[in-house]
Structure formats: C-alpha cells, structure tokens
Amino acid sequence: MRIDVVSIFPEYLAPLDLSLIGRAREEGILNLNVTNLRDFTTDRHHKVDDTPYGGGAGMVMMPEPWGQALDSVRTSAPEAAKPILIVPSPAGAVFDQQMAYDFAEEDHLVFACGRYEGIDERVIDYARENFTVIPVSIGDYVLNGGEVAVMVMIEAIARLIPGVIGNPESLVEESHSDVLLEYPVYTKPAAWRGREVPEVLLGGNHQRVARFRRDEQIRRTATRRPDLIKLLDAAKLNRKDRDA
Ligand code: SAM
Image (cartoon, rainbow, N blue to C red; front, side):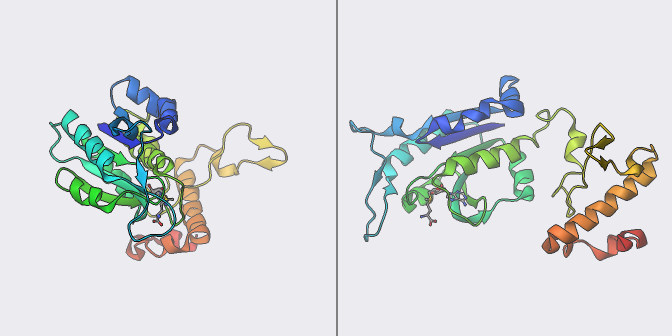
C-alpha cells in the first residue's frame, strides 16, 4: 500500500518510523511519504494561511499550495485508479474499525492535514476530480491539526495490512473486530501483589477457557459499552451467553 501525508509539520509524523509501522516501511510492505505543504508556496515566508472571507476569528489554509501539493501527489503515483483522499476534520464521519478494514484494502491513501480553521473548501471540491474524497473525524472533539488524527488512522489501518503484524491471529478476537470488546488478559506470574490469575486460565482446558473469555467479553461490553451490546444479534446468543 502507498500512503501520502501532506502537512505543514512533517516532523509530527516522525513516530511512523518506529515499531511495526517503521518495520513495514523498511520491508517495503508500506510505502509512506510525507510531503511538506510549504514546499508548494512561492513567497519568501512560505505562507499557507490567510484571513477568512466573511470575517471571524482564525485563519484559513489557502487553496493554491494545497492545489499544487495534491497535483504533485497525484502525478507521482499515476498508476492508482483514483486514490482515496482522507481529509481529517471534526466535521467528518467518525472513524471506526470498519473504516480501518475498508481503507486497508485500498492501494493508495492520501491524508490532507488541516491546521488553523481548516482548508479552503474549494480545495475539497477540486480534489474530487482526481480523488475519492472522504472527510473523517477521529472523535467528537477538536484538535489543533490533522497530524495526530492521521497517525491514529494510519496505525489502525496499517496493522490490518497482511505482513505488518507478525501473527495475524492477534487481529481476530480483538475489540471491535466483532461487536464484543476483548476479554481481560493476563501473563506470568500467576500471583502478583495478592492478585491471582483466574484459575480457569491455568488449567489448560480449552473449552473452559473459551467459555470464560466469551462470558467476560459479554459482561465487559454490557458494562462499558451498552450501546454496543444492543447491536449483538440476539439470535446468535446461546443459553450460556445469556447467563453471562
Ligand atoms: N474550525 C474547524 C471546525 O470547527 O470544524 C476546526 C479546525 S481544527 C482547529 C484544525 C484541524 O485539525 C482540522 O482542519 C483537522 O485537520 C484537524 N482536526 C481537529 N479535530 C479533529 C478531529 N476530531 N478529527 C480529525 N481531525 C481533526
């Protein structure tokens, strides 16, 4: 997969050199490029923002550097049919695991990091000529810029690309892979500061372990995320599930 990120703070994306994503880049599984929007300015101060038409507080990102940057990203990867342009915005659709699965299937994702009051709306309109444009929010709160939101999305998406996570089975029973949240997990030692690992996990009975974990998933989801438990298909619950 190829990922392009356009930002006025390329340094913000430096952590994407680390850990599993850094290794995926080294191994060529992920081709990730960060472009500095200021490289597409022509004035001495590399200005990317101006006052809003209609008045009001704050500044708006100017269309010309964005137009040039997006043209450059598009021409540097002409082979992709129509790349997805993800525009982080608190006014976008809320990012979730299903979006991560869908984006992980794409060949080319481009992220446009806004700053200030956001990007001149005509850029979004123009970009539709060459990209499938999707405004995406990472939650109902406001950040200073799109960079952190982009890192959240890239991490969630990249770990689903085959080869990025060593053991693909780790992805199967995770929270949000299905409706239920993940069960609690434990490691050695079996007793720690007066707290014991649940006895059922020590016995090696796979059926009992599976039942314990499923019960914990149902209980945890019902307690922490009652909105999710409502989505659980009642027809798929067996008697033991209902007892949990
Ligand atoms: N004036 C904008 C509004 O009220 O919708 C907020 C602009 S915010 C200060 C600057 C940039 O941060 C946005 O253009 C976007 O790129 C990013 N951003 C802020 N909150 C975000 C969120 N919840 N999800 C994704 N991106 C966000």
